[in-house]
Image 1 (cartoon, rainbow, N blue to C red):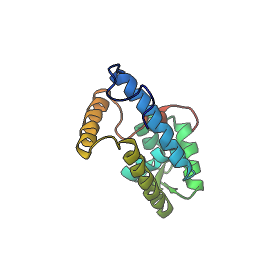
Image 2: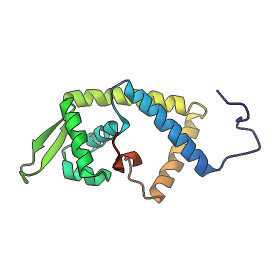
Image 3: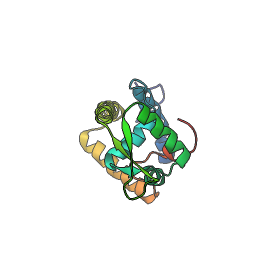
Image 4: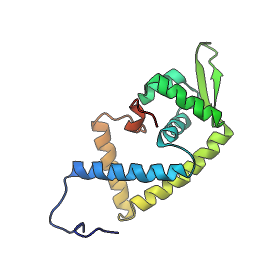
Length: 163
């Protein structure tokens, strides 16, 4: 639904940076609401997704790669372990360290997350053709790379605030 005075053909336009921020906040809010239906926070989803791409990461490696304070990561890993989505295994090379791996329940949760994320993308980008969606992703990837953002890591994960 287009709010009055917000039609795309209006002559008054907002700048790209503002629109990126506006849409980012909107998309994050909608995604968080979707994840509530799975009893997850976006931060927990981010950690699960990162572990899926980097299986067997140590807690230290995971915290460094995400840019998250180690204390926050430990609390999140505790929560994911409590829910049986991950398990910690003592590192054979460094007995003081633990590797984190997804469990079968964690994999199943990721599949549910993926379905919700696909629906989220479909709703969010419904105004664009498939070709336009691909172009938008390419352009946003280029901007994210140039800005030095960590690929696949939401900036909210790197902040020390609770989720």
